[in-house]
Image (cartoon, rainbow, N blue to C red; front, side):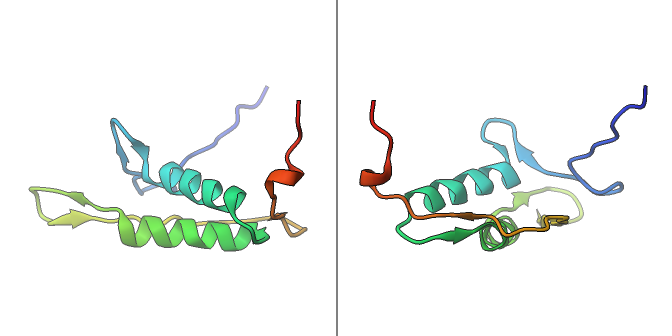
Length: 98
């Protein structure tokens, strides 16, 4: 049986995370998904992921005492999707009721 060889980052690079708050990428993704699902507009998945990349690249950094004053990271998104994914707008009337 072959093992899956999955990684959260490209070999040779590091993914940063706050021990209490979690990884920068997952935090940004969670925030953007919440915005998308509460939006009145349709949201395209590729646009959402671009916003996540921008957030991680520009809004997150860590302070160090070493050689660099701060450390940044930029997600590398690779897709083999063959169809568009979008989140249609959803109003309260569209929500299922019990």
